[in-house]
Structure formats: structure tokens, C-alpha cells
Amino acid sequence: MPSIPRDIHPRPPECSEDHAVKFSFRPVEGAFYELFTRAAANLVKGTALLNELALPGVDVQSVSDRLTDVEHDSDQITHELYKKINSTFITPFDREDIYSLGSQLDDVMDHLEAVGNLLYLYGLTELPSLPREMHELVTVLDQQAKITADAMPRLSSMKNLEEYWIEINRLENDGDRAYRMLLVRLFSGEYDALTVLKMKEVADELEAACDAFEHVANTIETITVKES
Image 1 (tube, rainbow, N blue to C red):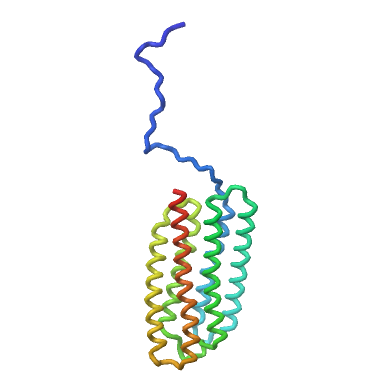
Image 2 (cartoon, rainbow, N blue to C red):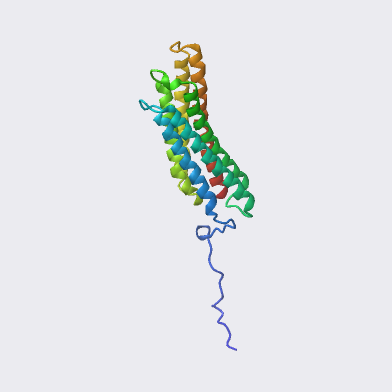
């Protein structure tokens, strides 16, 4: 048998951190991401309906009823998500994070529905005009909803999401400022005491919705960091 020349030795393949291949044992389960995307799309529908309340001659009851329909659809999506978690052996990322994200998306929708229902039930849209700061809060929510819906499909790749949660945080700060200015206006003596109490409840729901969008963004940031 011919001998192997001394200067020829089998070498292990070179490997460096730059060329390391990362393997994942988690499945790419598209159904979860589809449900998150549908839930986020409903938030855009919800804020669009809130914007309708500022239109002259709007049928406030119709807007409130449609908000309730969207909220019911969001509830159904959340139930589908929980059912999917319980029937899936290995999830794309931690079950606790999936539960948390699904619940937080549903929380946002609950606050949006509450705003529409309270405006209708309290008859606040019959006022000559709602406070400017209230419209500013709705505008912030509309921007948060659109950014969230745009980012959600990228969750499956866990890429290009940092700008999303940074912008959501910035918008939440804008919402906080509008909320504080709204409170200043409500307690300035411009409105009677009963109207102040009613509008304060609506303001609290608007501010809670802004916070809930930030909670969604924080959870997505946590998921991305854990899975990267």
C-alpha cells in the first residue's frame, strides 16, 4: 500500500465565528404568525373607526357597533391562538411569550372598543366638539396601530424590528403628553363636572391603549432578543 507523503495531512475544515452556522430546533409554524398578523390588522380597523367619530354627522351607534364586531373578531383570534398553543408540541418561540403577545394584542382592542362605546353611551359626540387633545390621542393610536400591523409579518424572521419598537415608544411618549394636556383642559373649568367625569374615563382608556401598544412592542423586543 502506498504511504501518505509526510507533508500531506488531513486537515479539519476551517471554522470561525464569522462562518458559524446557527441551527434552530424550533419549527417555523406559520399559523402563529398569521394569527398575530390578523390581530394587528384588527387594531388598524379599530383606530380607523375611532377616527370616524370625528366626522360631521357620523352615526355614532353604527361606529360603536362595528367596533364591537371587530373586538369580537379579535377575541376569536385570541381563542384560536390559545387553542393552537395547546395543540402544538413545539412552538416557534416560548409558549409564555406567545400567550403574552396574544393577550396584549387583545388588550389593545379592548381599550379601543371601550373608547368608542363610552363616547356613544355618554353622548359625548353630541358636544359642540371634543377636546383637541382627545383627537391627538386617537391620531397617536392610529399611527401605533399601523406601525404594529406593518411590523408583525416580520416577526417570523425576527429581523428589522428595532425601528418598530423604538417608534412605538416615541409615540407612547407623545400620547402621554397629549393625555396630560387633556387632563389640564378637563380640569380648567371649561366643562361641567359631569362631563369632566365622563371625558376623564374616555381619556383613561385612550391612554391605556397607548400603553398597551407599548407593551406589545416590549414583548416583541423581548422575543427577538431571546431568539436571536
